[in-house]
Length: 413
Image (tube, rainbow, N blue to C red; front, side):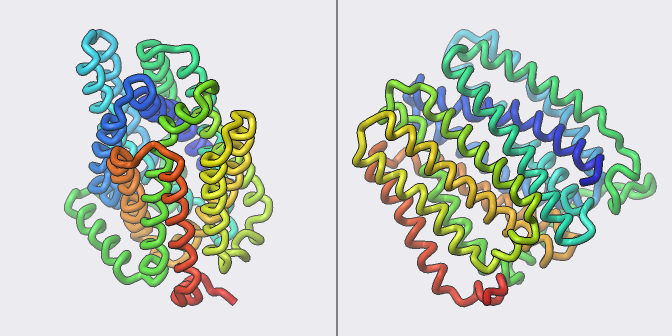
């Protein structure tokens, strides 16, 4: 992989550790400490603002040097972090909660532009499908390692730190991560094949225009018409399942306080292993793109079996073992299907508006998370709820196996 690309994804990893840890900590804190699933739902609902920022973030990344975007976002993030600093001096819990929600919302919004810049870099540095797979796998590997560190840090925060100490730690990490991003060069040779001419000025109306081009692509591109509806359904069901995990695990495995953070670590470790395999066997992975639906069925089946285990077994040792095994299986196959999908999209969409189109797609997929957070407020924290959610995943994918459109877009045999 290109050295400059490696530098970008490593710095992205540092940012991920800071922001992801705090988001997970807030979800856990609201659910377990305050017993406020409504706050978890509100935290998710506030992120709906990303539905407007995602496509525009992609359009900006298509027209502006991504290295400059990364620097500007890092500077803005430092300013936004001032909200966290201010929260340290509040004494009323409602005031603290409000400030934390505001920070999370603003951070999610600026992260849209940051993520789009990184996504553009993954294909700007690739000359062919093989390099695209390697770059995507490299990015996923770094993200996975960051998630492992994030999960480990979350376990420390949950077990040993209070809200104030955790907030101070996150402020330090965010500032530290910004220093790494600000040291990235914005010279023309850092991000190849992007507009970096001093005579070319970014225009907001051009970004909006490119956004609508991305939307038109979603309506007319066969792979998007075929795959994305299923992806939206699966994402919504998955995130609803995920959002009730902190409270459910606290109820089901009360003596193991780190169960939720362990779950996140397992997901991340398995993802890293999968991406390392993909790095070495990238051509083999794409040879299995015709089995995309079957791979999705396997990963959903893992969560369905885990739900059954939760329903009928009470031994905490067996439950923790099952948690590790089934989440690892889910994460492995989720990584495979994710790399296959993003590589197929990169192959079939015009590079000139790829950032815009991917930004639009990812925004649609991401908005299922806050909607699921809202829905989680109405879902009973019971084993039957998990079985129903994962069962619906299985039913959706069984129907997808009968959808003949996949034969064309995935080139099945």
